[in-house]
View 1 (tube, helix red, strand yellow):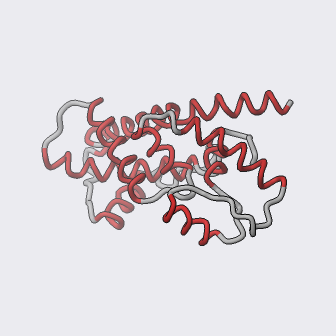
View 2: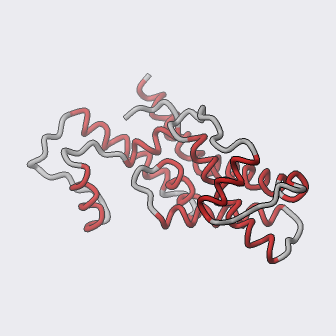
Length: 197
């Protein structure tokens, strides 16, 4: 397990290099945890990976459930629809709380805008170093994505006034919740890195 960044440590803590990935997922589904079996060829590096992963997973378990779900959706290779929906709800609710009231019609569309922003944020920060390019940086590309993915059409007229503040609020929420999620992992990574030095 590499301890280069908190994001990578989160990912690697849930990525188990088993003999068969499908049997590992099946085991997680049946038991809710991973169990080492004697017939597996477990090497010393595999055991070290599991030990380090335990420290990181314990730190993640200290998080509030919504923050943990956001982090899992961002970095856990086993994250599913539940984590995605919770993360989307967190972004939407957080952004709405920062801005004045919206009409019911705009609120409906804003929910999908929040989903789109989370998609963009996740794509930009996957890989551990947050060095990826925003895949939908232009307003036109973002509007096309929302239309193609969710069937939500946003007008290009008054784009800056109508949507830019909400989009920025969504990015701010993503950034804030991401920092909250990564904080305990960063502490553990720092401690483990110090011990190894």
